[in-house]
Structure formats: C-alpha cells, structure tokens
Image (cartoon, rainbow, N blue to C red; front, side):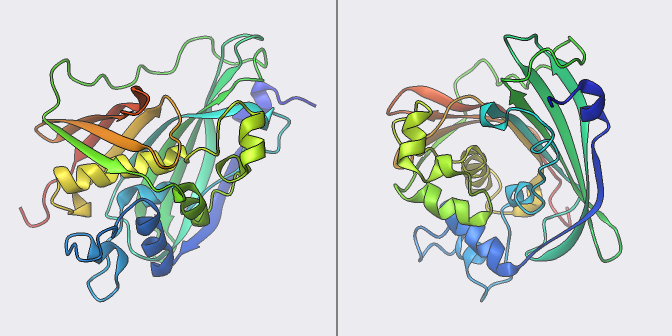
Length: 288
C-alpha cells in the first residue's frame, strides 16, 4: 500500500547505534582520491596511521546511513538524491561509536505526474557522553510518488554561487574503478557496479555515487582553501544535478568570500554541471 503524507511525517528512528573505525576512515579517504600520490605529505595523514589520523568531514554522511523511507511503500527505484547539507558541531573523529536520531521533516507534493520531495534529517551524537557531532539534511526526489499529500510549496531555494569568475579552479581525475572502490564505504546500490542494470536505466555505464562527487568537492575545498585542515569545515552542502561516469574529470570551481566558500563541479568532457549551489562555511582556526 502506498505511503501517505501522515505516515511519512510520523516516521522516526531514535537512538540508533552506529560505529566506524580508523580503517573505515582510511578507506573512505582512499575511495575519494586522497593518497593518489603516496608521497604527498599533505594527504598521507588521511590514509596512513603513522601520523595523527585526519578525516574528510563529508565521511559523516556515510557513517550513519538510514533507510527510514525505503520500506514504507514508496517507489524506491525512482528515488533521486537531490541535496545534501552537513553541519558539523565538532571535527569528525577518526573512529567513534554514535547514536543517531532520524526523521522525516517535510514532504512537498508536486502532483501525481511530478512526484514528491521528501526532506530528511539525521542528528548524530557521540555514544560516549552524548556530545552533538553533526546534523545531516537530505532531499530525496520521489519521482514515482506524487499525489500522496503534503505541502505544495517548494523547499527553500538553494545557495546561489557568485556571478563572477571563480577565484580558484581545481581539476581531479576519477578512476575508472572508483565507483567499485567507493561502494565499499557502504552504499552498494547495484547501479554503481552492474553494467546491465545501468544500461536498463538509461545510463551508458555504472555511475559514480553522488556522495562521492560531493566528497571530492570537499577534498578540493580542503586542499585549495583550508590547507588540509579538516577542522575548518563547519558546514558543507550542495545540490546534485547530473551524474559522473567513473574515469571522467571533475572540475571544481571555488569562490571564497570570507568564511563562505561557494562551489560547483563540472565534468569538462560533457560540459555538464554535476554538483551545483555548493556552500561551505568555514569554522575558525583552532587556537586563533
């Protein structure tokens, strides 16, 4: 039976335990391209435990994955991940046990033919002591579930990047096997590995995870703006606008305005923006 607006808004999952290890943090960093040059001493602390291990802040969106709306009668096969905003209350530890509260915060009904937009929130805290760690805001486009009820307004408008040339442009090469590597961080959706399934859904090959593109953009902010200081990332959000095929290049355009870094990502091979409306708010330097 299809889910209703009232059922979705009542969905809650509180005090859900999650945990990750230093090995998970190292694998995540490798899966998004850290350590590609094993002699790069700026990136080694993210992948080699000889140094005090650092984490890529966007790993937070992988350590407490939730399936709150996946088994309630919605057409999961037509889901699209639309937007992700991460707000960190403290730097992400290299390893931790966590408790998470997951909930649906709003449903925007676009009509029977257009589907719905489902807004979700996860609040993570450290299991030892309960200190808040981060909030994760997500938008899911449920393209097959219009007409289920909900508000008819639109979600808040995304961040607008500045109308000027970027202050900095960084280009990263993705590996042809990058989706196969990244899926080991937890998202094993077959569309990232099965060529036959990908083609049946209209793609020429398995696609890279949107959360991997999101993480690559964070890596570029870390490298280009933060001198690899992961504690500088206070929040990080963007809208997913197109897919990346493993092996393509990702060009990240950056605008720096005080403590706000705007960004978007483009695949130059196809001249398409795959991530847009990006906004990173920088935290003050520790000890400053």
